[in-house]
Length: 439
Image (cartoon, rainbow, N blue to C red; front, side):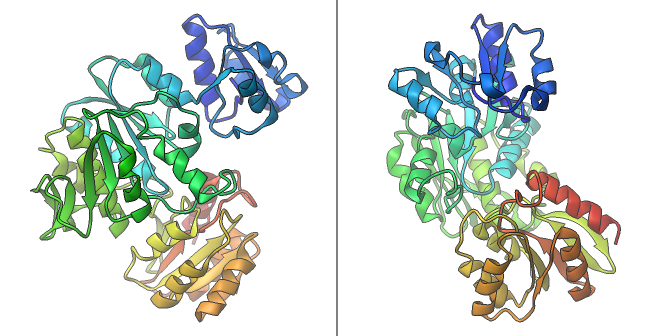
């Protein structure tokens, strides 16, 4: 196992494989003092930990290497291992090997966590035994290790996880969309697309592939699966999939619920809801209680989350929007006047469409972080009227507050990663919620 980390993937892989009789060594380049809690958690498992300068020693003698999702596949130890013919696979691949039950796997650039959780809720409300995890919550291997044959595993899977799969075969594969993302890790959009397409590589005709008909990049990958195609669309009637028609969310041509009863906000979340309906139905759900599920499901933290209302202004935390495309979707979810807070460490460097959307919506803009000037320059070129520069999130909130009036929305949708000022987008969102709670 390479990479112990703080999200539990390395620990769970090591624990599960050791319990099944494997001789497990975990390598991590961090010094031991930074991994104290993770090392302590493995103290009774028989797993050996090599940290700091000791990492990767003896890797040439391994039979199987499982890198954590955050570990690039092109680091020298992994390249050397592959040259030696050692099998290198991701945690979700190993989870598939041991899972005794079907897996519904969800991927895409945006909407994965919301859709994965919603699928689980729909199935659970119908009385199915369900475990939800993967790239959210508990690692898939931990769920697979404890699953029973009558269970369904619903997992969010990332391009990093899919990139190192060989046999992974979800019973239901869901592709929500494809936009430029993670190009700091993948060398090109083509490489990113290839990683996502591995979701379908091993499917068979008795499986299902749920794909967004409205997203050209995603829809083009339908040719790569042998599974039964189940499209979903907000713009086309699809009697063989899930669609929006006559003000109703439908599955297989049958009305499930009216649009206005869906609790989630934004048109993109209607698409996520359709994907969830299609996937749940393909996984055996009748959808008899799906209307009730959609009427109560509020979404997830850091995703268009109403953080506070102060002086009639709604403060919305959309910290998970780490690309310009995601920020555009967030802006379009509101009819109200918006003061947008954006910026951070850029994943991509083209902010032109975001800037044009800001201008079209007549939104005000507060920029911060490493990408501040890039975003501001694009906004000036697009004709955005109000552009403010802030040194950090605290100042950004203060500046946004001065521009907002009762009935407005102050929206944190950064269009960038958080790593210039925060550990991750959750920490950034938490900081925003703390700041606005005190207004």
